[in-house]
Amino acid sequence: MNFLASYGLFLAKFATALILLLIFILIVISAKTKQKTPGKISISNINKKYTDMQHTLQKEIIDDKLFKKQIKQENKAQKKQKNDKKKNKIFLVNFNGDIKATQVKQLREIITGILLVATPEDEV
Picture 1 (tube, rainbow, N blue to C red):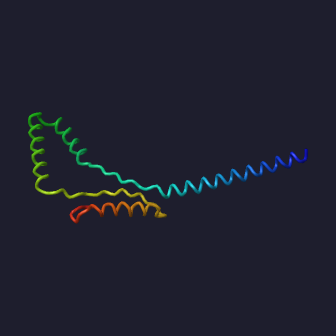
Picture 2: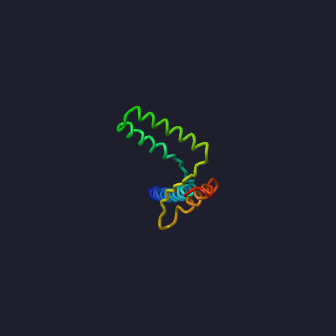
Picture 3: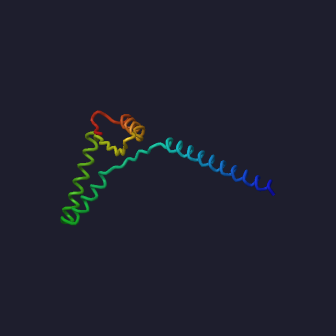
């Protein structure tokens, strides 16, 4: 009987040590995967959003004929502008850093990506 009690106590100690070891391994693995997760760059064109908003408001305010005429003029101006010169780009970087500077690597990658495609006429 004493043997079974000792054996049960040994199994309990072994199971506890095994569980603690597994928890430690999981913590280390999760910390490494968080560091390796690459940031993502999202590109969005906000011109269309504001143009649509402007058209919606103008459609409600002015006469339909005048609105259609204005749309045609805008389309002609856009085509002419497209053919005349290339557009200068504006790059907007949304960076949320902390006091430990954990996001500096991500910022460095974003700036490198912008520098690869930006020209001197562009704005950041």
